[in-house]
Length: 282
Image (tube, rainbow, N blue to C red; front, side, top):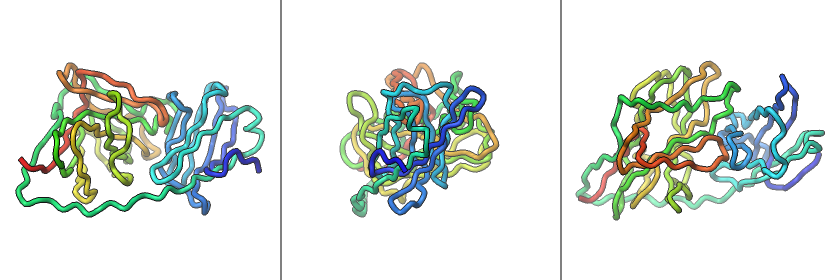
């Protein structure tokens, strides 16, 4: 078996289906256990997806990508890997194995007695604009797409209570959502602030507000941050999942990442319908 690097375990098989390349794979840890919800995609492009709970994924390509663009495999808690694929690489299965990163245990959060509940964000339920995250004709090809919003929390500790977002439309039976909180660097989301993945399943929800209780995550944030909703899984049945977008939304900032390993796009004076609730000293 050909090995490029000793740190990741994917199996990639190419097939030509209706003039398309289909790359299938599986992501495992060093003990060959499948890793779910791993972002897999070609860096800086819209070609990407997220692995299933069995660690499997599929990428549909209309043509072979530029050989200078690496395939990146990344997941919180594991060392990321980048591999440049060639046509010769597809002559036999490729096998990579992700190496686990040691995660520093989070200290217990101790709140002071006199805290006030603060609500930040955009509660607009009726917007002219919507964004459809499930925009590919191939299943799962836009998993890893992410919608974010900037929140100005101010100095001092802000204890995160909940995050809610407004679903404009959805015909999937179930969705898997990953919540991320980011630092801002040069105006774009950069370092992830939550020390562990935050995954929530949404079942049978066609439209309206979805609220995630985050009290047990023990998150303490301060300053300007970005909260995001990342679409990482869905039932087999369905092809549409969209969120509200307000425009104009003065002094607000909207972020969008189309593709599991793509770069962030920044849209000033726009906002998704997203609300963050925190507790803080007044």
